[in-house]
Length: 129
Image (tube, rainbow, N blue to C red; front, side, top):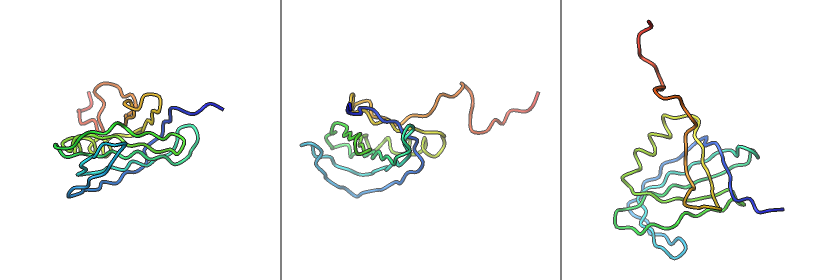
């Protein structure tokens, strides 16, 4: 059987973790971690549990390459600490949201919304015509 290179899962919950500073090695690169958003969900095709850790790094940090282990349903990506609030805002205000683990192109490991029509928001406050 061929190795699975891509997995998509719907993110069902997340946890935000703030750090004063944690230094951790990822494949020989030392990341200076200030925050972590752990995204957990359920596979779109297999209903298994998946996790994507999004590490938010201090400005002085090196940026490791994405870490993807599709067989164990885990991945990690790395972003600047300044992106944390925008990332959490998407998780709080959009639905559904999907995690994509990409062993074939690890740099494409991502979090996405679904397709939405232009101009559609959570609530439409326009008066009825």
